[in-house]
Length: 235
Image (cartoon, rainbow, N blue to C red; front, side, top):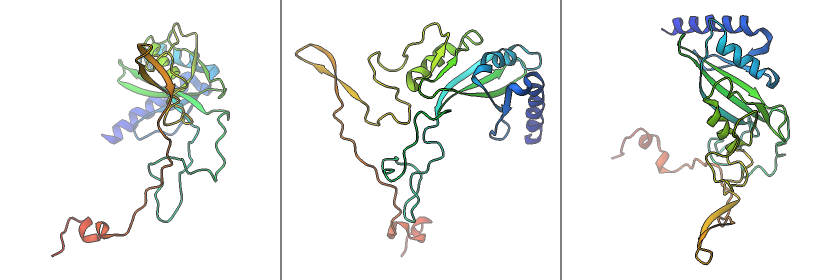
């Protein structure tokens, strides 16, 4: 089965390469998956080809997701007693912070499905400008992109040129910032509270006190004895 799936993936890759040539670049993907990257200027042309070309027929946009690469590839800690799995980057004061305006910080990933051919493909596009990330809307190619692009705008601040109704979809209309950006504060910027005098909900400065999280430390005590880890109770 695995060999047959690999053959199908490679056959699809040949069709994509033949149809799009240098407009796309194949990128690493999990086994039995096919992923490509293209430039922002080529996005609409590539999407139309993937939808309309015989042998491809990706007529359905299953999902669209924003990505923020601000902290990509940066580990939290390197110590002998703490792991770098989980917890926050709150103790990175000694390291230079990443540049939020560096090119390629934001990207959009399109997950496509060809119902007729029973094939899937992932397409990624990076926003050229990280200060004001903008891409062309693909609503005219796949109508399902409408709400997906609104979600990416709401949570990541990515703008979609040509979108018919680009406004927030998950957060409140008065929400400040974009919650899925890596530099958005974990405690938020404001909180809502009912004001009995005004008899309505109002915004107030956030009252949660930020705290610095510490790395996970594996302590050497009886809970980590080999016999106990293996589920054996000493007698």
